[in-house]
Amino acid sequence: IGAHYSPHVSQLNGALLAKYRQVLNDETMKKLKATKPSASLKRTKKNHIPEVQYDALSIANYQLPSCNDLVYDPNRDRVQRLSLELFDDPDEFETRTPDEWLQLPQPIQAKALWCINHQWVWLECHVLSYDPQSSLYQIQFTDCQNATGDSFCKHVRRLSVCFDAEDETRFFQRRQMCERLREEAKAYRRYRMLIDGQDASKFAPPRRDILQGILHVLMKGTRQMINIVNMRQSFI
Image (cartoon, rainbow, N blue to C red; front, side, top):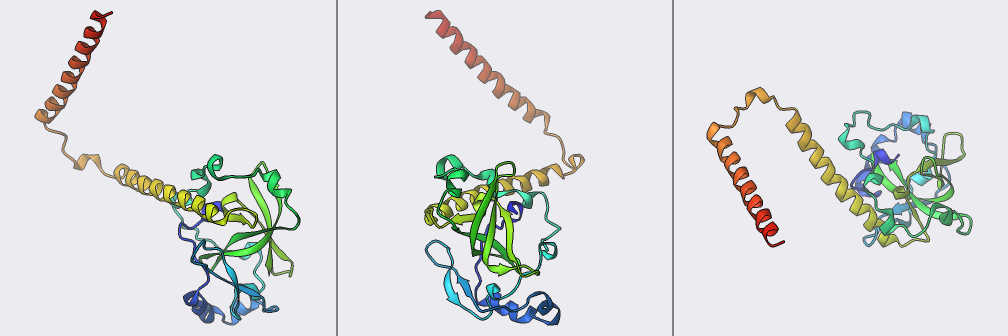
């Protein structure tokens, strides 16, 4: 899941809801079966945590397809597969161990990322367990159901779940730092891939006078270092 993170997390808005009005055709309605109206999501300006607002077109009002029906972009390149957790600094931002998070009063309230029509939104969920081998939390969305009518569960990484008991502002600062570092890494990798893809035979080698100038500078610096070392040894 972490490999599919978007650097720009978006919430449900008017434009996205307008798209839902276009895609809710006969074929889609077979998979998205309306249930009882429930709370939808709206981004807050302060910390991007969704707040409750009723909307008839909320994704929370529909049963979601099974995991096998979820489609992600298969054409992602290597640069886009960088996991956000690779740039995380738990020592600076993490306040509890996974076991300490699981010791919170049950049910453990949180919000987790969910991809809707290629847009990432935060939905209410309960944290069920943690797998130390995969470093994944198992969560259960409170307002979503799969095709069989059961509550939808999935495994997510730490940066995809925001506990209600933690500082939301600090959590999103943590994500923003990781997103910025990942963008820098992606830019550097794109640059390296561009350089490596060039045909070296199309570039002329440096002129002889340029190489001699570089060698002269290196030799001059080496002689200066030798003189400094000799002067220091003379005072010993």
